[in-house]
Amino acid sequence: MPVALGRGTRIIRALLQAGKEYVCVMRLHGDVSEDRLREAIEEFIGEIYQRPPLRSSVKRAVRVKHIYYIQLLEIDGRNVLMRVGCEAGTYMRKLCHDIGEVLGVGAHMRELRRTRVGPFKEDESLATLHDVLDSYKFWTEEGDERWIRKIILPMERGVEHLPKVVIRDSAVDAICNGAVLAVPGILRLETKIKRGDLVAIMTQKGELIALGKALLSSEEMYRRDRGLAVKPIRVIMKRGTYPPLWKRRRDKGYKFLRR
Amino acid sequence: MPLLLPSDVKRDVLIKDEEPTDPSYGCPPEKRSVQELLDAGIINLDKPPGPTSHEVVAWIKRILNIQNAGHGGTLEP
Image (cartoon, rainbow over all chains, first blue to last red):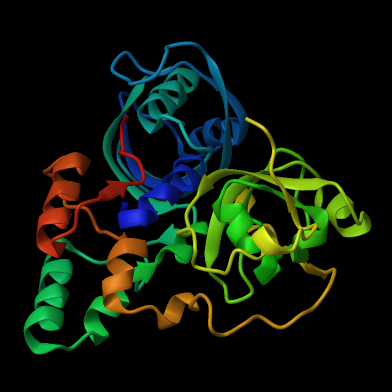
């Protein structure tokens, strides 16, 4: 579970929308051959229709969700261990139940562990609460910051899954003040951005400035030399981190919109 | 079957223009002080199964002595 600190909490939106991976144990209510199980699971890869379970925090209307992959890890009698990559907001409990329905024997979810949220996986960056406490003590009491640096990652790690747009120093403070990023402010950008995508606006030093909604595709941002490119929806960087050049010289890298 | 999410798509970089960045402003993320990380950082926490996400976040705030922290979604919302 990613835990964001201080201003870093502003990137949480990007993680809530990000794809997830789970490992879960599905308990079948009857005996099923491995072939039939594989066949049923295969049907759930791709677009599925899911009604959120009774106990859920969202409206219980049928929603379209994407399952990107299901990997069958182990079958032990009626217990099935599987790894599922899916869209944000997919209910694993419901997925297990629905696989059981297709099989005709019924099934429920026995155990669940989330193994990935967007850029965060179960790798060497994973830290327990004990690690957090110990590393903090090491830093405050012994002045040794090596350990805590391995545990508290720069918030930029939390937007690694988003496409990036890198902008001029002269446009940074305007964005911090809520201006819309215009094409001339862009130095570099990543491919495959579609209009409406969530993108990260970055400095040349690799700092996250804001999350925004793309108003143009990558292709359009690259080809055009004017127009509005990205509308900030969450500004993360503090104002004044970069000089407010826009007060003196009216650069063309951004535009303030009346709101 | 490759275990890939849509965000794993390979992206290339398109360069529109180049100019130097002024080193007197800003700071590359890896050069941030620990104090700064406490206000601009993120922990990939191995959440223990018992307590709620909310409780765990409250502990983190207490351990790290910070005002603000938030988590990236509960398991079964």
